[in-house]
Length: 234
Image (cartoon, rainbow, N blue to C red; front, side):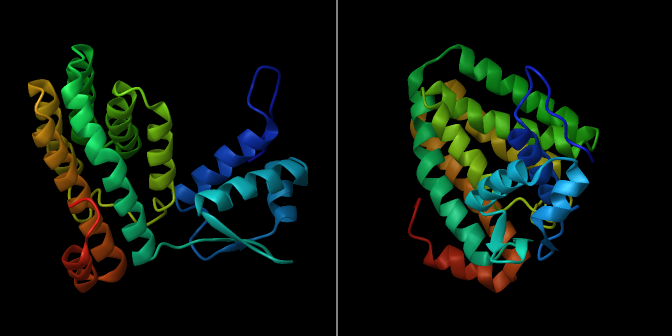
């Protein structure tokens, strides 16, 4: 588990952050578990300084909470977390999908088709890590197409903040092929240059994902409550 940063590589803090983030997102550091900076530094084979700095970044993402004199605690995910994340994603990604469709970039539809085809191939191979990365790549391509790479970074941060063990729909409430198919109307609308259809398809995809995740975390009634009370991204 030792982390080593050499010349031309990421800093020790970057390496520790990446490793701990992966451990949290895969569930190897379980929600609710507590860890001291001292023990983490020993396990990772680095000094406590990069661990402390990495922990601050994880806390900023909402992946951990810092408890005075007790180290860190890996956060679980609550209904409010999922609701807040998807309300923000609706505000960001729905207008971006519309703008991407209006943009008329001839390269974008080709890129989106390639990513979608790769998503389906990953689904057929039951390759969850590759599928998840391709899913992010498709959403990122839309943000980049409208000249806003920062938006893609913010969406990634939002996704990271809830993507901990047990909070995913793949293989539970829908298959990877189902998720890929939900992206088809988005890609088709961008190909057609139909901004309204692109916005509607993105909204439908995000609302469905949010409802499934909220039901998973808080039960079906919580999902119904969210959908009845939703005001953002209508």
